[in-house]
Picture 1 (tube, rainbow, N blue to C red):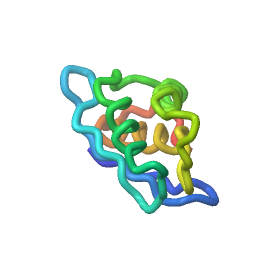
Picture 2 (tube, rainbow, N blue to C red):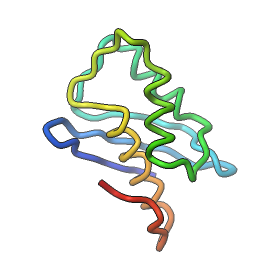
Picture 3 (cartoon, rainbow, N blue to C red):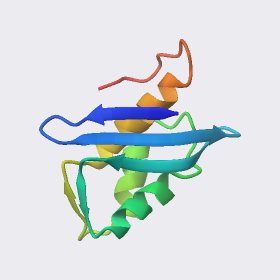
Length: 103
């Protein structure tokens, strides 16, 4: 599944993922944003891995936020933007399901 979100005043956030047994799998974050240190990208992907497919944007943003050390610098990206991209990917893969707000 594939989801994209252009953060207002920010950059493009892209998520590619699979769902296995109701959980996120093979999560890959990409886009035209910047993260420092580079290891933060792995931390975000790892945090999203195995999350329930029906997790809300707020739950996903919290998971991402908790996975990042306080010294991580995000340019054109936020935990909320990642969560929106994840929900868009999941909603696109679930035809007719419109239970989640798309920003």
